[in-house]
Amino acid sequence: MIGGVLIIKDREKVMENVATDEHWKNCFSQLAPGLLLFARQWARSAADAEDIVQEAFVRFWRKRHDVANRGLLYATVRSIALDFLRRDSRRARRESTAVSETDQMVQPMFEVEDETQRALVAALELLPNEQREVLVMKIWNELTFAEIASVLEISQNTAASRYRYALTALKKNLPSV
Amino acid sequence: MNDFSDIESKLRKLRPVQPSADLVSRIEQALGEDRSTHLRQMPVRLGPTVRQASTAGVLPRERRFHFNWLSLGLGLAAAAALVLFARIQLDRPAKKSPTLAAITPSPAFSTVDSTAQFVPAGLTQVVYHTRDEGLHFPNNSEQPMRRVRSHSRETLRWRNPTTGASLRISYPSEEVSLVPVTGQ
Image 1 (cartoon, one colour):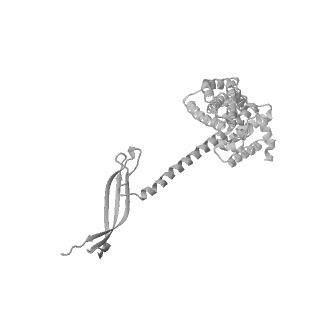
Image 2 (cartoon, rainbow over the protein chains, first blue to last red):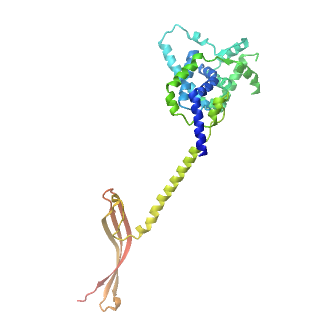
Image 3 (tube, chains in turn green, yellow):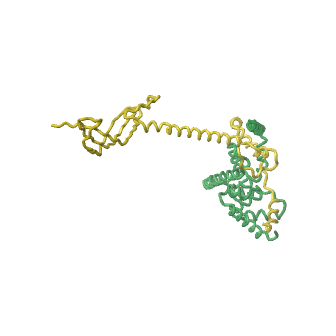
């Protein structure tokens, strides 16, 4: 019975969190910049990336997944982003928009402070997608290789290899580093 | 990995662009649409993980797997009840088996349920060996009698007309018959 009482108390606490909206806001405020950066790998604009993150986070939260299961959250973002990319590609083919893709891509992904960082961002954009997404998850989202592997459905060794290849390529493109 | 520490630190200094101000309100609105449902169905996402996430600055890393001891206890209790029930069911036929082995040619099934009523459906007797053992004078009788020993197999069948189930018992039998001999 003691365990039952504790569980009821735990549930009340969770209910309080949901009722005050503090819980998801705390989670989201911590995750949002990294999630947006992750979504930008497939989105052509910041607005599209926000749409992806919004849909993924709402879907994740509604299904009441454990917030500690970050691999699942990022897998949800990736899945929605890929769907979005497919839809967006079809739409782009159908429509002749006045805004070119290059105009959309110049929207910054980072808050650059100096020329070194600018060069680093430029080198980052030259990386292959599969290396860049591992780097983004590792550096700016602090996922473990196990979590990255679960998101991408690859082995941990492959994830670690892609990470090393990405860093090697960055070093190569930035001689001063 | 030490070779990359420098570039890793430079990468970490890069700060991703912050989300727009209205993103949180959009999510809040989306979640608010099913707020009542959300509150009603609220979980079961129990344990320390959630509490840490709501209070700590950083999301917890490695507490993915945690037992719900109440569920485990209930599961074990259910499994124990199932095992006990299975044992009781297995024991019942074992108690009845001696009765079936000593059954008579006209068995009486004492069934409570009328749907389990078996009625006799047939009796077959196959004599596969007969031997004439000669004349005998049983019980000091003055009249001789011929003793005939026969081996046969009898099969009794019952059928439940309601369910269509049938029961068959087959056993070997030996019969000795004395046939009076009349002289002419």
